[in-house]
Every structure is written in structure tokens, then in C-alpha cells.
Amino acid sequence: MSLRTALEERGMDGVLSVARQAGPAAEAALKADLESVDWTMLDRQRRALEKGEPKGAGKIQPPEVKPASTSGAPENAAAEEAGWAALRKGRVAIATVAGGQASRLGFQGPKGAYPLGSVGGSSLFQMMAGQIARLRALTGAALPWIIQTGPGNHEETVEYFARRSFYGLGSRTVHFACQGTLPALTPEGQFLLASPGALFRNPDGHGGFYRALREAHLPEKLRAQGIDTVFYCQVDNPLVRMGDPIFLGHHLLEKARMSVKVVAKEDPHEKVGLIVRREDGRLGCIEYSDLPDELSEAREADGTLTYRAGNIALHAFDLRFLEEMAEAALPLHQARKDILALKGSSPEPVKQAGVKFETFVFDALPLADGAMVQLAERAEEFAPVKNASGNDSVATSREALNARTRRWAKEAGLALPEHGAVEIQSGLCYDKGDLIAQAPGLRLAAGGHLITG
Image (cartoon, rainbow, N blue to C red; front, side, top):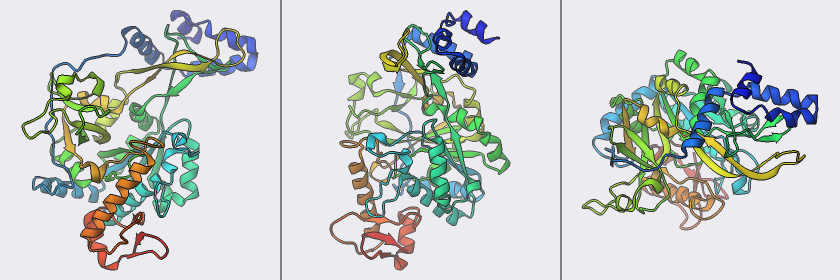
């Protein structure tokens, strides 16, 4: 189908008129941009505009949940053994979604580059790289690290790692995959222009992870290395247990195609998505706002919320399932907001009503024939950095890191100053047990509260 035909069939051929007025260069640039449009996806976007956002939770039940990896539950023993075995055999790759900028934190650069460490200034990327390095040392496996970037920070992220020699992980084992974009539309379903020669586009959401890996040809590369399982996390959570062997073990023993970790909601009105068991028996994630008050406030006999499985964007995937999701028609979520774009004959962008579209990674859960849910202890595993202040901020994340470090150090018998932040040197240990095992050889670095070897 020619570009002209594609536009005419959709009543969108007027989009080229602004470019023609701007000259041959703008017209050629816009035509090239339009040639890259996925017309099947565009038709889905326009149909989604007509239907609106799906609402309502339907008939649901709370999911079955495995105990937290940090709980010491006896039923985790077999999972831990299976997880470590998979890691040692080189069956696992680790993926981190890091497509955002840290501008909301008052920092110029990729969010993963934000210096969150309150003593040593370690960045989010450095903290995660240190965990992977330690896991490699403990398992003797390569454990490739995939970093999903965004169109606004891809080059900067690659350069960031190159300048730091990939934190010693090796450039051949750190892979980058840039997520795609989707054109924003007017409420009537027409294109918006960022300039005479370019469509207004926005990143396609964390659901773009699946296609990003496919476009980077990573699934086939991973399979050639004997990898069949992928651990997934987002870059803004410094407490994440990268490649958690117990989580991976439960995922493998359950023969799950996709698994998810959750934290227990304590406040029924906490603004976090909920993992539930749907009427068809499959797992799904619903918005907190779609849960009626009588369900969101329902409690069990022990006082805990009935619907408490809060989604923290932490998953495990079967590699084949991950590939299949690159072709799946995941739901399109809409964000209606004012967009700076060209309008009529205006030479400069102006604010106007627009609709951005994105997909969510967790919307693949209902498509997984097997899926597993595991609890994560919030104080040990979840303290995201999303805001400059208030909840889920730099301050609250640092407080959580400091509190966890002090708990670990106390159990390891390490003497710490009574006050002040304490940080563990990046890559020194993987978890509390690893810190305890190394305790006799550890010390506090001179001039700061940094636990080092």
C-alpha cells in the first residue's frame, strides 16, 4: 500500500499540506516519518479512541501468593535451590527498564544515572551493576544485562556506560534496546505535528519492552547462549533483588510463562495497581481506581486487606513467551492532555487537546498460560524513586536504603555509628546472608560511613 493510499483511506491526507508549505525538505522528512508508521497499530489507536478506556474490575478474586524471599519460609527452600541452579547454569538474563529522564528529580540525564547513594554517591545504574557483578562472582555465570532505553536517553545511556567501562561487566554482556514510539492523535483521530517535518510521537510505554528486545535481535542472541528465562525490573527501585534466585525458582518450578512480585497494600487507597485473579481464572492487573470501595476496603479475619497484591513492576519471563508478546495486541492506554503541536497555519507549536497512547508490560499477564505471584517484603525490596519530594522520593528511598543497611549490618555484627547514613559499597554483597558471610573482613571506609572490604 502506498503512503498516499494509506493516508487517503483514513482521511488523513491533509497532514502533508503543512509540510508542503514549509518546503521540499520538510515534506520529504514528513513523508519519511509517515513511511515508518505501523498502520495496523494506528488503526488500533483510532478504534481505541472510539471505544474509550475499559472500566470496571469485573468478577475477581485475590491471587494465590508465594511467601517473600526474605521471609525464611520453609516452602522457599526448593525454589531457592532451583533458582541458584538456573543462575549457575547460565539460563538467566537480567533486564532493566530505564527509558526515562531524571528531570523530575532536578537532575539532567537518564534516571539510572541519578546519584542516589547518600555516602558514596552511587547511581541507580551502579547499584544494580554491583549486584549483577556479585551474582556473577557467586554463580560463575555470565548473566547478561539488558537495559531498555528510551528514544530520549538511548545515546546518553550508552555513552554513560562506555565512560564507566560498563562497571567492569564487559561491553559484550551489557546490551541496550531502545523502546519505540507511537504517534499522538487529536481526539478526532488525526495526526499531530511536532514540526512541519515530523509527527508528534511519544514513547510506547513499558509494554514496548517486548518489541524493543525483538528489534534489537536479543531473544535469538540469548537463546544461542542457553538462556531461557529473563528477570525484569525497573531502574527506579534501588532495593530490587536483581535476579532473585527464590523468585526465579518459584517461577521455574511452577512452569510459569510470566511471574510477578507484589507488595502487600496496607492502605486501601494506596495508588498502585492490583494483581487479581480474573473470572476466567487468569491473572491480571487492574487500576486501583477501578476497584469499588467495598472491595478495596474489604479485609480478612486477620485484618489484612483482601485485595492487597500491589504491583511493583517486577517480573520473570519465559523467553519464548517474551518473544510472543512482541507480536501481541496489548491493550492501548490513553492519556488525554494538552500537547504542544502545530495547528493550522501557525508557524509555532501551540497547546491543544491530544491523546497519547502507551502499552503496559503487565497487560501480558492474562495471556500467560501459567503465571505465578510472589510477595515482596516492602522494607527489604521496594523503595522507588519517582518524585523530588513527598512519597516515593529521593529522601524516602535513601531512608529505606539506610534502614535496610543498618538491619543487615546489625545481624552481621558490624559496629556502626549511631547516627548518619550508612551505605554498602557497590558490588560488595548480594544480600544479607552474603554480608554476614563476609563480615569478618569488612570495615567502614575512613572519612565516611561506607561499608567496604
